[in-house]
Length: 84
Image (cartoon, rainbow, N blue to C red):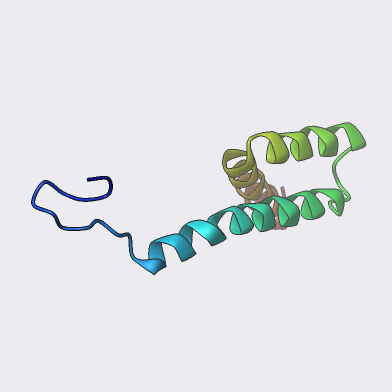
């Protein structure tokens, strides 16, 4: 009876489900790696700030990376604005 509905129909997940959930951890690892590399090459942060951002990106992967990219976009926009 395991894996079947009450009327005897077998429940099988499509292969696409397995493929998507197999690549999700790889995408997360790639996101964190790119974020940490980008943090390391940012020249206008102190070493302590870089370590804090990298720790945030590693220990809270999705939110940390998203926060970094939003912070970077805001900082870049402020630096490009004339008179800022």
